[in-house]
Image (tube, rainbow, N blue to C red):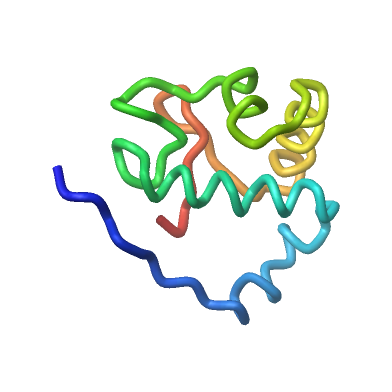
Length: 95
């Protein structure tokens, strides 16, 4: 499979996403990393690698945070309605 070279990012959409704006800078930073991983994910837009769900413990290692930090930020993002869960994996509605 060919690597996806890029994705469109609209700064104005990022700045106007009310749900995301209610989250802390830490949660928003984690979300940005997650979007990048979902861009590389299989299937596209899902926090998966080779159709396997990226678990919180793995995500923590990938982004250099503790498991507690990641779980806290994920809870914050979920409470705000930033992401969906489909087939057991976090996914982006916009992707």
